[in-house]
Length: 121
Length: 110
Image (cartoon, rainbow over all chains, first blue to last red; front, top):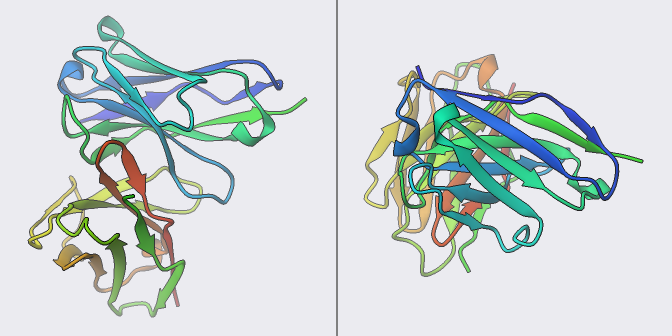
């Protein structure tokens, strides 16, 4: 069965960077894009960007474009999201999600379990 | 600009039915959307994709109690025979040059 398993919770200081991983199984990794979405406490879901797992090209939300990098390692069947210059407002649960489409934007059909990132001095 | 609008809350009794609404902005009535359920303290789960013609495709293992439909710029999620575990936040999602989420509807099962 399709699974997306994320790395564990992180605590970071303001100004630092965090890198969250998303390891997939149960399907051909390069056939589907992977998105990253975050949810601040009590807030709505917020899209950050996606990566075409086959070709490696990416697209980012304008809101995060200057601070986020999404990468993938096909041999590890994993995608990664790095967020830089962290501030307290970045405290949130970060999710990876699988897109039904490989090379375009569509809907998500599987989600990772989420990774809590806490930014605190 | 593509925006999805959802009512912040809804409620219905155990065993009853409820219909949640997601409204697309004017000019985007031809877009499909997807519904996701997020139970308390859990990750979201994909429920169903709803096309503009009302056809829908459910996710793996989603019970028949969940269904999607469409009318104009509105996309619906209907849940019948409500159970306590249906108490959750429900988000609609669509896509254009990026991914857009609605604000979510908190469903309370009375």
